[in-house]
Image (cartoon, rainbow, N blue to C red):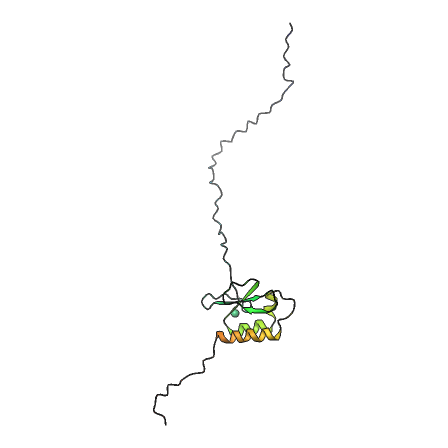
Length: 141
Ligand SMILES: [Zn+2]
């Protein structure tokens, strides 16, 4: 009747008795998280002047699957788009300098026909007022 219980063979349980030193250290508040969270605002930018003018508005141009680049007044067409402001100089610059083609990731330059069409569109943005001073209400005979 020998009942021997196997005792734990030297279980060195190192109890971590880390006592906080009593050095008057005020507990710091957790890290503040007041970083400026970047709002995801789709920034539209004129590819020519790199400005975004909300007042004047930007015009969307879309590279259509068929090839040509067209103005997209509705802004709903599918395809890679680029924006130009309504400054005719920007259109000129974008069309002449290949900026638009680059912005639309075109492999070739925009063909003349399309350029002409876009120029035509641009010309409607800032219609040249022909100085209509037809206020000739004087009796002219
Ligand atoms: Zn511009």
